[in-house]
Structure formats: C-alpha cells, structure tokens
Image 1 (cartoon, one colour):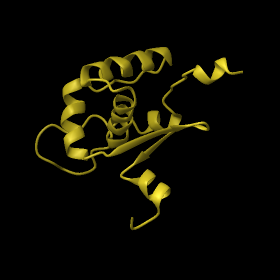
Image 2 (tube, one colour):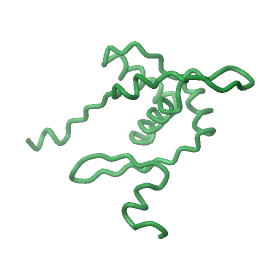
Image 3 (tube, helix red, strand yellow):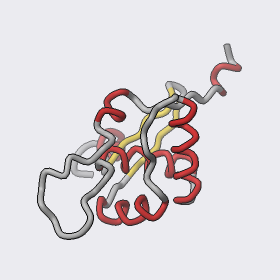
Image 4 (cartoon, one colour):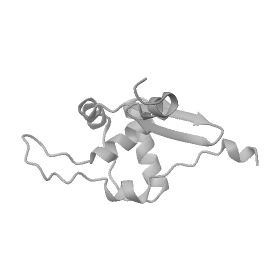
Amino acid sequence: MLISRGDITLWFSDEVIDAWEHENAEKRAGHPFVYSDLAIETLLTIRELFRLSYRQTEGFGQALARLMNADMPIPDYISLQKRAVGLGVSIDVVVDSTGLKVFGGGEWKVKKHGAGK
C-alpha cells in the first residue's frame, strides 16, 4: 500500500480532450488560435508541477498523448510560451497527505487564509 503512494498516473480527462481545439468564434487579426485556453492551461499546469522548460513540456504532452493513444496535436513550445503571457495564468500546486491539488489565481490562499487576507 505505501508503495502505491509513489505511483504517478497522469492523463488528460475527457473534458479536456473534448475542449482541446480553440473554437475561434471571434474574428481577430492574424492566425487564429489552434488550441483552447483550457489546453494551454493544462500543459502550463504540468509545466509548473514538474518545473519543465517549454520544450520539455511540449515533449511531455506528446508522450502523454501517445501513451493514451489520443489523436490530439500538442502545442509547440513557442505557442505555449506566447499563450502563457497572454493568459496570465497563476497556478498554485499543493501536495498533502490526501494527494495533489492544483489551484488557480490565488484560490489556495483564499482557502488557506480566508477571503480578504
């Protein structure tokens, strides 16, 4: 049982896979987005969790998709870097005895210390 605590199993949920591609409902100048904000945020969370470079994150995403037999394109490292700036994602990763939880935008601080602190 204690050995199982060291097991790391990752996968993309069906919700993430279904929303992987950007809908491009708005007209904008330049090339339309290929990947949804959710896809970029998912990979940026993995990047933050494992402290990877953007190139390593791209490779990790490709390996994970291959492992899952998921036919989904993975953003290249330049796209990840550019979209990360535009999204302004703030991620807090917390690990305790109950497992791993990823919080966004200071959510963990509010839960830990209460609102307004």
